[in-house]
Image 1 (cartoon, rainbow, N blue to C red):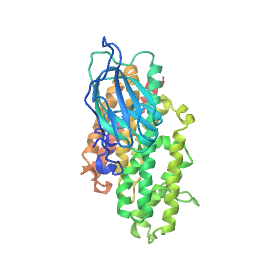
Image 2: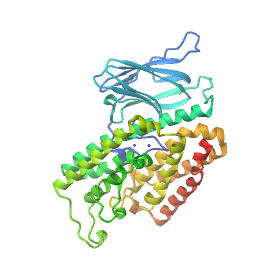
Image 3: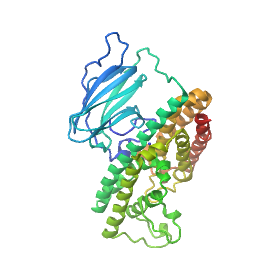
Image 4: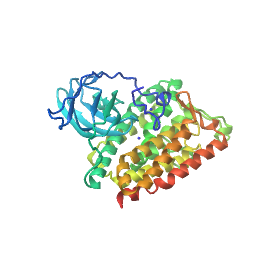
Length: 406
């Protein structure tokens, strides 16, 4: 697939309350200039020092072109370093598995723009972040070479994005489960929507593991005869307990403390399994341009079939958090392939840019404080407007895969 933490900046973002699980971590950056070759033709080199509570980058900016981040792990846990897009979601590039005392380089060609650097000690959570700027050096940093090279980069970065979202999902789920099993329902309710956004941003990927998806995300209305109900929406119903009238005329019976522990522990175990699965080589090998393009469309289909209808979060009515997260994930997928689309079909790229911006404007209009209004607060006209925007984006998005594959 919500401040310099994992809350993405608009137009992709959920705001702070909608990402209540995100830690407010400080980032440290000094102001020395990046090193470069004597004639200025070589890459700009910056040093990064990662510890348990700091991510010190030797300069807050570098000129566009070839950039090297030389990352030293001065902490006690394995760490990772990321260069993220301005939205704080899309991974531009990363270097993983830097053991204590080791130094590894992240080498990339950077375009002018605003970015975010992040160290992730322990390889969990949203990381220690700071803003980073790439100034315009006048060097042409547009994609070069075969389209296949661009697609390879897009798929590599998308795999990294999915990994990052599952890691954050796992961290947030642990906090949610801790609150829920301890009986702290107010905290659990506050964490519910903001944790689920990480699932919703990568939902088609999560759904590719067919056994996990029904265990984790099945709605009560979709239960088959004899099927046991588990996962997020079971706990949602227990946290927002319905009246008998809203429960088919039957008085709702709250889960016992033992049942709470049983189902919460299963949710956490399933989330751990999901995280483990996307970190395997087999998963990475299965991601290509087609799966990314189809996944983007699948995310918008999720909006159309559940979020914009209010059926997904029928007890909590937090559907707009899910709506935003699905749009986040689709936009990240498209952004990764955008250079390819631009080269193949510039009109399609322009259409997608416009439609993504328009749907984001409508979502932004429904923000309330740091979150969103509840679905039940929307008027029929507002629901129709959102649905029409989903349809308008769905048409060009359905052509994304063909544009990058054919």
